Structure formats: C-alpha cells, structure tokens
Image (cartoon, rainbow, N blue to C red; front, side, top):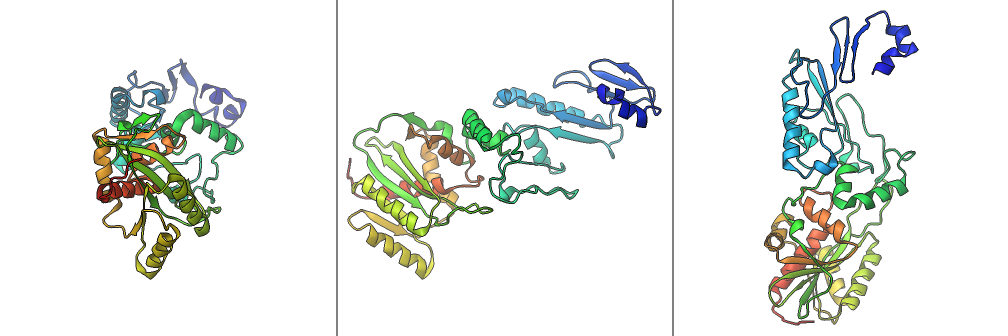
Amino acid sequence: MRTIIGSPWYQRHFGNNFRLTKETEPFIANDKSGFRVNTSVGGVGTGERVHIVVNDDLIRANDADSPAMRAQALSHMRAMSTRGVDPETFSQVLIMQRVHENDPAGWAIEQGDWETLILPAEFESDRRCVTSIGFTDPRKNEGDLLWPEMFGADAIAEQKKALGAYEASAQLQQRPAPPGGALFRPDRIGIIDAIPVGCRWARGWDLAATIPEPGKKPDWTVGGLLGKTPDGRYIIADIRRVQDSPYGVEQLILNTAHADGSEVSISGPQDPGQAGKAQALRFVQMLSGFDVEFTPETGSKVARAKPLAAQMEAGNVFMLRAAWNDELSLELGMFPFGSNDDQVDSLSRAFHRLLTDTGFVFG
C-alpha cells in the first residue's frame, strides 16, 4: 500500500488530498484521520473501529485439522465483526482457499448474509458461480480450467497428485469433504494388502450409458466388488468405473463377470417401466451361467447405503490397497452431498446382495 501511495501516478491524481503521518510495518495513518492496520489471528488490532475488514487466509492448510486453530480463526472473525464504525455500512471481506468444511469460509457461507465468489480450479457446471453484482463464471465446458495460462492441465494434475483426493477437493475445487464423512466414515476403513481366504463375493452395479462431451458431466457406470469374510467383516476388493456407450457398458459388465468368475454373485438395478424390464432381461440373458439378478431400487439412496455405513462405523469394512482408494474415500466422505454417488450405489447393492444371498459359496 505504501508503494502504491508513493507512486508517481497516485501522487499525480491524489497527492493533494492527504499526506501520510505514520508509516510503520503494521500501521499507516494520514492527516485526515484515516488509517490502515495490519494484524494477525490472535494479534493486536481488534480494539480499533474501522469501516472495512479484509481477512486473508486466516488459517493455514496445515492447521485445518486442528479444532483449536479453526476455533481461533473463527473467534477472530467474530471479534472483528463487532468493530465497525457504522454497523449499517461496515463490511468484511474474506479471501481464502477452502481447507475444511468448518473453516472460516464454511462459517461465512452458513451465515447466509455473505456474498460468495467461489471459483473452482476445474469448472463444474452444477456449481457455476453467479453473484448479486452480475458476475457469472464465464466458463462453459465441464472441467475448463480457471487460469490455464498459469495452471494448465499438467500443473493441476501434479497438484492433485501432491494434495491427495481430500485436499484437492477442498483447495482446488473449494468443496471440502467432511473429514469423518457425512454418512460414511471412510477414516474407519482399514487398508489391506491381501484378501483373506474363504470370502463370499458379490459385485453390485450402478448403471449409466453416456459418453462424456464438452459441457456435459455424465454419471459413471460403476461395479463394486464386495466380499464377506467368514468372521463377518467386509472387504471392498475392486472398483470398475467407466463413462461409456450402452454397448461399452454391456461389454464391461460381461468382461468383468468372466474375470470375477462364477462364484461372484452379480446384482444390478432394474429401471421402472417396460424398457427397464427389457434391459434387465437382456443383461440376465447375456450373463447366462452366472448368479445374477437385476431388481428395482427400493427406498432412497441414503436408506440403501445405511447398512453398509453402519458396518463402516463399527470398523468392520476394509479395502484392498489400490489406485481407486482415494476416489472411493472421497465419494464416501462427501455422500450424500457430493456430485457423484455411483460407487456408493454399487457397493450398497453388493452389500444387500450379500445379506440376502442364501448361498454360501466361498472362494
């Protein structure tokens, strides 16, 4: 700020309006009773009366998991909100990347009286930002980058890899997942490197049949393989996930069935109406020789997911270490508030099949 005020351009246009009377690191004042004070969370400055407060990164990403640090940042914001010269015209600005669902930005959004400008690194059409002053995120195609000249596709991919699924969702997409999960508790899932012997298996499918196109964000076809051990634990052993044409989806299901073997039960959804019945019949015929069912969905997604969530809460769910672990954990942690729930649906169906299957074929 001192550099701007001292610049020739500023002095030429505004230099006669005031002169600076104090220029220390934390405090600048002029001869018209104006001032600007810099402070930090837990620092000085809350005793001043001001017209505008600008809060910039009140909490570091490394401190986001600390309840004490989050509470301190929120306490600072609340304290500053009472320091306005005129409550009618006083305003606060908060600038930060999301680091936790209960970070200062989450608190501000929950209050409901803040104007929000949320710009994810990769465009999500269902979260297009529109503000009350007429700004609309100009991006049109799903996945369009916010600043490709600075952060291109390779740079974003590297950041995702470095951050991991949870942190990338929060810091890049401004969509933090609840750390312990909303319904599911992915932090309770144990990671294993080998499958126990004697498991009973079911693969549940959640179907979609749309190829991705610019501006469209189709659902995924997902097949989740879930096993039940002889002592009653559950193992997530495989996730098959694709966005493809109807023919591509059929081939994926058939090829996966042959790869799994006839010991694995197969369960898929039957859509309402005659078309759904015809599709289910076609799948059953295609999978001749396998233990297969296609049945209508009953109840809400949340209701169908609760039995598996209860086992996860109890620490009875494990998953095989694999490349898909992070994406699955992210979706579980966001459910039912996330943009995708296909993996959850497939595993809920597999779990139900294991519960209702009266056979005891162990592999």
